[in-house]
Length: 270
Image 1 (cartoon, rainbow, N blue to C red):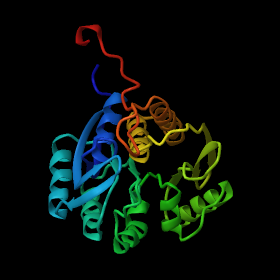
Image 2 (image 1 turned 180 degrees about the horizontal axis):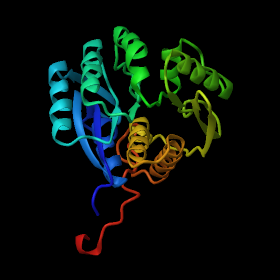
Image 3 (image 1 turned 180 degrees about the vertical axis):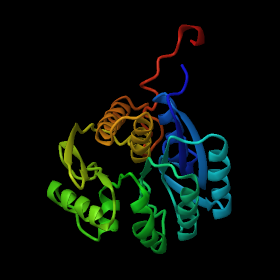
């Protein structure tokens, strides 16, 4: 098959392959599209935690974005880990030049093991300038709490925080509800004119590393193929849930999900 669309990923690398750029590439490929990358940082990590983070120079991030897009223009962009204000500025300036309309921002701030991945100055710039440029932002509950300076303990708190993000300037928001200790996971989509609650079964597993990266990339992929934003969220959530359900049980900590469950290998390659 030929790729359905072209997606540019701007995010950090995960050496264990479960999250970050690696998860993004797997997701976009598994859903039938073509992935390009601009790496913002290199991390040494595994399922037990993050050992080190080496940032890429903002100028080189800009070069990756512009030089890639000049040759192969993306249909959509997924933005993940942006660890400093200078990196965020370089991304904002690059977006002004390439003018891609479909942008999904996953405001990655804390790793699964609790390591903080972004500083306070960067968070402020993210809120003030980058949130407005995104078609959709996809924070989890801890990230939504940081962005809105609120506490989220229930579904109503999630909705309140989502509307607060709309007030800040977000075009639409999907707050992921996995951090609440409920039997049903509720992900809540909010725009100025709409609200939709997606209910999913909670699977008893610790292998959920990279679910946020994977979800935002899946949504970006569906969006890049022309699907409406709410439908893209619905399909992205289904993809992630299937990946969790069929996870390969790798690693001693928070293991990866199964990105390959949508792929059927042709007989001649088996």
